[in-house]
Length: 416
Image 1 (tube, rainbow, N blue to C red):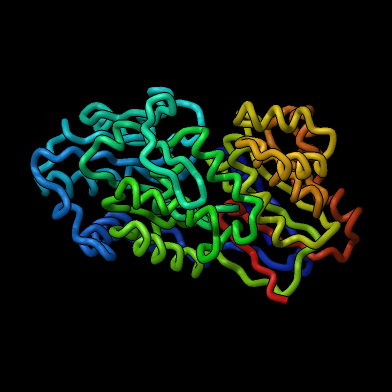
Image 2 (cartoon, rainbow, N blue to C red):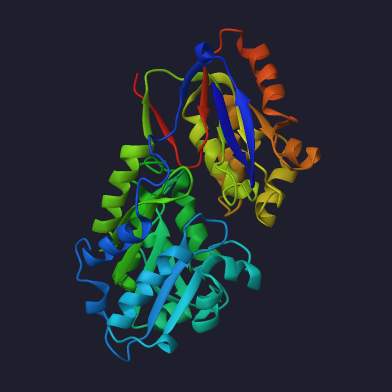
C-alpha cells in the first residue's frame, strides 16, 4: 500500500506491504464531498438552538468576532464572509465590528500572518487585532475556582460571536464552542487555572460529559454570554465537511457528534507500531502543537511498542515555558512527578509527552535540530523508512503497524 503523510508543507511517501498494516485511520471522505459555501450558509440560515445571527443584532450594536490564530487549521478566511454578511443584514456597520484572533498562550501574529488568516480585503476593511493578556478584565470565578479574565474589547462588545473548527483535544475533549472565548482570549493565569485539571479523571480526548476542563470552560457563559457560535468540521484536505451554528452548547455538540462519525475509530487491540503524522502545517508548526497527534497515537499503541511521529516543527518547542521544562528534565518520569506536584502552563505539554514516552519508544521524523529532538527524549530519524526499520527491530518482523495520517484529528479507541 502506498501512503502519503504530511510534514509541514511537504508530503512524504510510505510504501508498506498490505499484510503488515493493521489499519489506516483515515475518514472515508472524498475531496469535494461538500459544497463549502453552501454548507456554511445553510448552517447560518438554520442555526441550532438559536435565532439567526442577523436577528440577534441591530444597528448601533458592537460585535466582537473571536476566531483562531495561525496555529489552528480553522479556515477563518472562508468562514468570515458569510458571518459578515449576516451582520450586515442585521444592520451592523463595519466600523462596529472587531475581529479578534484568539492567541491563548501563543505568540502574536505578523501582519502577513493576519492577512493569510482573513484575506487582504477583510484585513483592510475591518478592525483585526490579536488578543492581549495585558488588557483583560476579570468577569467572574468558576465553581472550580478558575478566575475568568477576558480581553477587554471582547468584554465590552454588545454581541460576541465565536468561530472555530471542531477536532479532538487531548484534555478538553474537543476544540470549538466556548473554547474560542475561554481560554482563547484570556490570560496565562486563567489558562493555567483551567488547564491544571488536565490531570483529573475525565479530562481526556473525545470526552465531554464528566470532563472537568470542558465544564469549567463552559461556565464562562454565565459571566459573559456567548451569543452565537459558528464551527466547522474539516476533512483530510482541510476542506469544510460540516458547519454548525447557533447555541454555544447545542450547536457545538452537534458538531462533535459529526466529528465522531468520521474520526473516532474503534480497535479490537492495540498496535505494536504506530506511524502518525500531525497533519502537516499548521498543526506541526512546533512541538507544542504537534504533541496532540502524539497523544492520540498513545491510545493506539501497546505498552512497550513504538510510535513514529512525523512532524516538521520548524519553530521547535513553540513555548518558552515548555522548552524550560523539557531542557531541565532529567527523565520523562520526573516530568510527570513534577507536574503532579506543581502544575504550570507549558509544563503540561511536557507531561503529556512524558506520558507517551512512558508507554512507548518515540522516533521522530522532523525538521528539528537533532539536539532539540533528543531533548524531548525522542529518537530523531532522517526518514520514515529508517524509523520503521528500528521499530521493527524492537517489535519483531510480525509487528502490527497502524498508520494515522491525521493524528491530531483521529481518535483510536481500544474496545477490548
